[in-house]
Length: 397
Image (tube, rainbow, N blue to C red; front, side, top):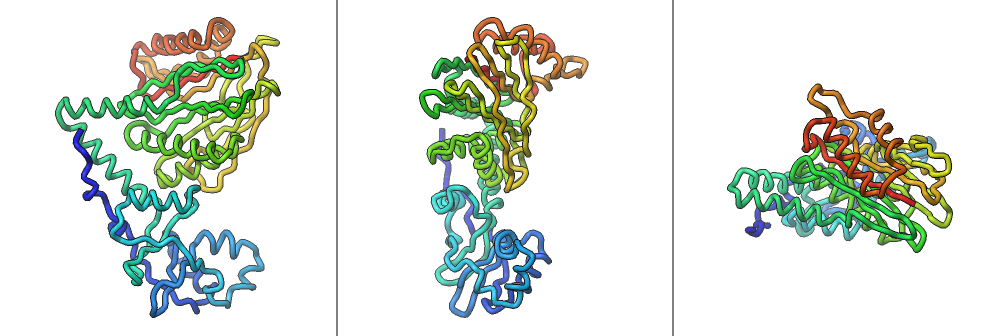
């Protein structure tokens, strides 16, 4: 495959907004009024004759400094210099957006930063919004893939390789840990999938499982899914294992990548063999099911939920703890299963899914159950192809 000419990547100067600077002596209430008059303004540079002195961001001003009712009276007539960030991240306009993103992640791994100033030498140039920079990267990559799709069979072969690479990022479909047996499948509806699954060992008796689904499918969905997977790994490397905290952290990665243009549902479950329990957090994802060997019942875990990832920056995700004992089984999936239509346009639906679960979840291995479910949906739809990506993960204790 030919190498990409990085000289054609957008530069920060291409995505820089011209934002008139303010003086350090401007009062806090006047700065607040400037922000309130322009909803799209995320940051104001503070400059004097010598250059940039600092910045004040909308988020910090309203969510931190002026969050309390008395704060306006306390700070309103004081100069903005007392609240400004005097040491912001500053970049040059000639830096390409990929290098800028790498620098931003090194400076702010949690991607809390929503904008930063651009200066050339000592001269202030403007402000870059992180969401616009990420979308410039996305558009550049999407444009490349769209061009490849229009070329010869050789190029289509390269796209197929990209799919193989994405599939290669998934962990093995079968896995065992601490007496747990796991089987998973991801079936693409297009070359690049917006679904993904992952699992991770926490210690010798705990295993985490994640299933995610980006809205739509195709190139941009695949990019968001990849960013979410990278965000998960970064959080795990930092020792974060609680499902709710993991979803909140991945939410930041999805927001930074999609700029509210795309959302992602996800569910994370941590199974503790020692405590005979599963702890679960859900971000707008289809509810998992558990088969309990003690009474033969199939239960839907619907008592906890939250906004999809990429919906709000400050979303929090509550956790549910349920029993998960020897002989129990859990099924996580994406909506490509329940929304699969037949020739008449009727969806497979939750009733048919639950009927299959009650009839088949007890018998056979997780792999046999998973294969049977896929085959049942294909028979219903009358096609081997799915209109949406499909992911199924089965865990047996």
